[in-house]
Image 1: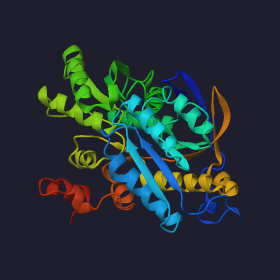
Image 2: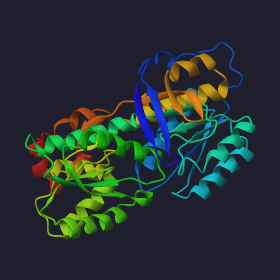
Image 3: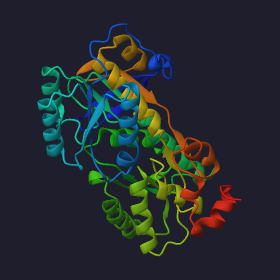
Length: 369
């Protein structure tokens, strides 16, 4: 059983991986007599726009999957809070007022949204936590194994530093938003890999995951540590990695240290090709989004057997035990496996990555012949 530390509400999340991947019931009818038909409304609340994956992948995939599962009769009511917890609370209340059938909630602030989740429950509307675990009486949770994400990032940094890596190597940690529980899990996983093996010279929590804030913080770290003494940078996602790289370049660093990322954003994949960014964490968003849509439709229609088959993992929070869940695995994305991950899965095509300016690098990486 993995234990994942949740910040935001200073909680601990324990995860059982039993049954992970056993989703053969997803495409079946599951229950003989659903309580609702295909004419359902799925509310989708996403937290912010600084990560382009929400608009580019999550929402479109969920919308298409809901339509497919309901023979075109179901619809998705979508709202993005733009990192404003108060706005998300208002959006959630609107969905309660309009009586959507089920809500997929990716919270801006896991603690602040708890009251809204309780209101939805009182109104008879199921709430499924999506990507981030919200507090309150949620019906299920779907996410990636977030502590593993941080471990993968940390191990990748150690691999990049080589066998001679040691306590004399100073690294900077550029973590995510302090009110995002996932960010705290990423950090906890990274610390498991890095603690005692290198020296964490500076560590920052980045408000609202803003790349501009990461750039400012990295400039502070460079001025304090010295640009030539930073051997690697843990950046929690690709947006932060971009801000870190801008700060290093502005300081005159031409031979960039290994820098991690997460989300496999297109600019980051290009930076991996050129060598500016060492790695990212590829999280198969289509799989997460499709599973979330399947869970939402099954829950809204009262297909309890199918819903149980889709949520065979379990998570514990301090407020509730055995929350039904599904954890999606992740992959370290480097130059060596771009073809076998983001291209194979249809996230990008080689021409999307290989702009004319990257022709030589793409040739060397095997993406262009």
